[in-house]
Image 1 (tube, rainbow, N blue to C red):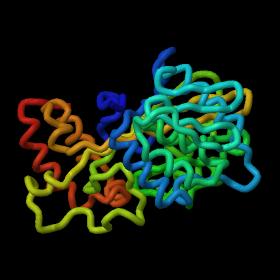
Image 2: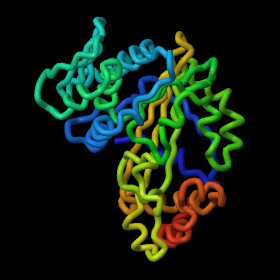
Image 3: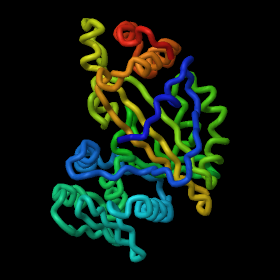
Image 4: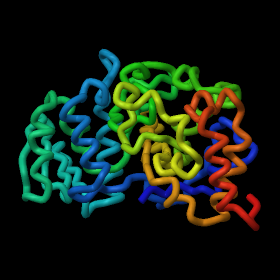
Length: 318
């Protein structure tokens, strides 16, 4: 389960802002996957069919030190699920696969046999990064403090954006297309410096989507998100509550941070059974600007979603 915090994330009026919150010491940042988990199945599909849209880096960039630090972090947080060794061998224990420093893939047991062919199909230099992707629910990116660029991405489950169009961009450029982005852009350089220092941070992102899968690359999503013929009740049957918990693993010695993204997708009807939560969602959704609604593909769905939420918020206020 993602540690998405609706109390912190659902604000009214809605604003596109950094929304950083300090992580308490010892708070986990990674979520190990079990054989058969939805994240594992979708990530494996992406890495098997579209690896060039998920595993990306700028020419000449050396991701080795950051990936070593990420693997050590994974081992420290979840030693029962992931093993990092000094000789460069990484072991996803729950999946039953190892990848050594040369990219050689070996099976340790038979818990998830399909991971092997997926890893073998990748270029050797990407196999350990892919093992991390399969072992954990999170996607990963490396952020540089000095340049504020993102020169490396391992993103299998993007939320309606194309990773291949973002690699190498500055942090501010990544948010250039975001609607009502003035607060994000103004804070971008300060934010990068903040998250590459020793303190750990998290933030939360949410939307309502008609796309049911975790993998929402724009080339594989339906551009006609909300059929106009559906009434509010029918519309909610195809509505999904999409959330992201984003955290930063700082690497101050390298002047970098590893950015983690844990995406979850839940049927909206199931996600907002609590009337108090429905009230908070309604207030936030109702306060979105036309630009934000358009950016999130919610313009022609907002009124019907609000009408449905009204039925679940009687007697409650956000």
